[in-house]
Length: 378
Image (cartoon, rainbow, N blue to C red; front, side, top):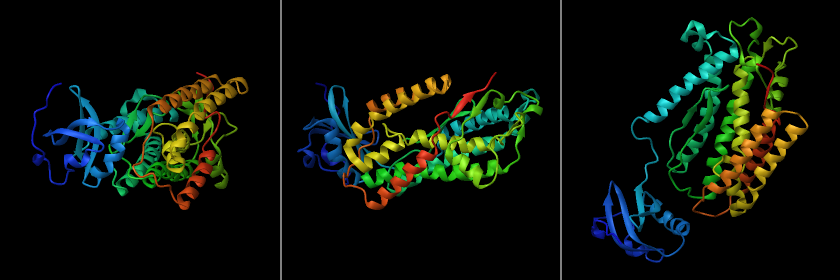
């Protein structure tokens, strides 16, 4: 067995736990400070997950997060100082955001039917579409971010995902680098994104349906609207109905203003994120409510998605959508293998949060449509 370069326990910062105090869970035989981390070398006295769950609260209250790793054949408990704030300029986040602005402008230009032969100026004309899509995604992710900061959980700023598809993006994610202190915190962080995103969805949809329709028949270029048709869920349809506006027109050359697509994105992203599997928001919310029973409940999700795929293929003859739901069934099955967040404090959530969960479930149902997009021609 290799031996790390050693130091005495006295070299540890005073706020860190004394190695002897960990002996019931992790028997320490050496410690060192390396790259700003405190490393406790030793032998775990229980399974890896159990060791971390038992020791994480003790380190957390001292301003550290902890993980159990294996380095050069030895078990090492690595304690890293927690930093819930943002340090320096997050260039990766900024770079991905700028790329996503570009790809959403490109996708928006295709929805409006702008000719791209005129150069970048045509892309800038699609700013309402790009703004609507980026707004709902950003509000969703910052909902998570704000509640994470509120509960003192270390989390990254959003990473936007640029891709040259019909939307210009695959969404956005945040990276959680910390332990969740309680089921209450897990619930708040998990539900904040969908609720914030739904609020943005309502606003963007209301603005979009109030704007004049676009005549893609008179457009200089080919519009995505001549190739794809979006299926709007009850939430989007209800907003249009309340405002007395249209989503579809008898004249096939007219389409709802592409800003409405931002609302469609918000609804679709909310539905997918509320699937209770793996690291998705729905899994965080349901784990906060029912604890370890989620491990069994989430197995029903891929089965349900496969059933949905079979339905739209057999009954609706929507092959592309069947592939879409089948792909998400595969992802859901994969997510169940990855696992989800485990709160340190298993105390149950209160009745107020359970009421919020029930309301969120109703809202999730309003974001669902079996055929969210279909191919109309090329």
